[in-house]
Length: 486
Image (cartoon, rainbow, N blue to C red):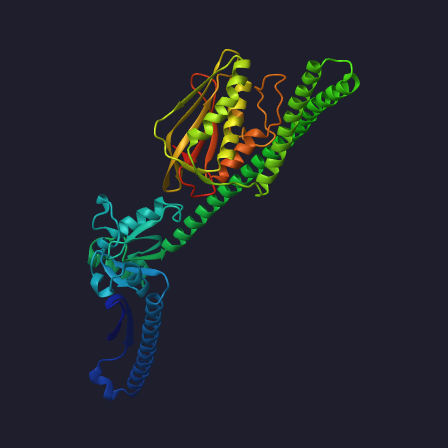
């Protein structure tokens, strides 16, 4: 008679049986009722029983080792730094480690044996099928860092994660083919997977740091471009200043020599002919010497004023004064010059303008330079207009009440490329009429005087033709820098 013994050892995973080890033990012998009369049969039976006992002990030891290994693996998975979620074959969560609890801000007990739909921003086609959605994302996203998956915390906060998946098929859990076949026969169909493991790595902070670094890199590139542009502009400005300086020295050489030659020539004539020419002729010599000397003194004063202004040593006697009272004496001086050039001088002013705190002599100097410049560029028969009206000077968030003085000529205007440099020292416009001359210092001195009064100067072209030169003077002196006029 053949006797069969079976040992069936279950293996557990998260509280459920995932595998059974079955072993068949056979022993062959005579009918048990005849054992007492057959000594040799007893011996064989005892040997087989002993063999069976040894096998059972071995199986028990193996089972204990497997359980210990399984426990260690469960502990490692539970304490892993990446979030690990195990889905069972029916799509419910069977394991949820500590990192997953931290990532989703939810305890394992709250999601265990649930579908976990609240953990991800699922499209409608994957409703109730989190493993399917994760598999689809991994298969269709070659660069997960550039296009990460969105995980949802219990608070609604969105976290960016990279995903790794592993599908554990039913056959992967069977140690013996016959038992696997029995399991498939019992289930009636292959479910596709027995378990689905996903590993999630939170890259939210890393992405934020990379985005910040990218922003810094772009900002650094902008800074480099800006510095290169500033260096280029500074180089061009230095080259322009150098050219202007060379032109200034050439002009100054001519401007200084011309009156000096006139002074020396008429002085020499007077010296040689003082006893032969009539007194009227001598008076004419002296008048020309005086005119040339005055012109020479004016150029020297311009040079000295600019040097003092740049050194901060130009003195200002600030007082309450009305701009109209400063302008009218200058207009009287220039009426004769305007008539001699065939120009018409017009003055327009608003009524009841308030007084300003200023140095009347220095502001008068600005008016003279503006008018001289306008006379130089206006054609014969043209009109030079001086206007004064109320305005405001913007200094940051502060708006300062001011008076704006504007001198308009009827010349050819200022080339657009020169509008920003017209108040630079040694600067002379390319539109300057031939033979006009000049040092190129007058407008530079105007800017220095304006800045000392907290005022602003600028030039622009008039729509109807000609150039406009502006001075925006604050009614009360509050600051040392020019602002934006409105």
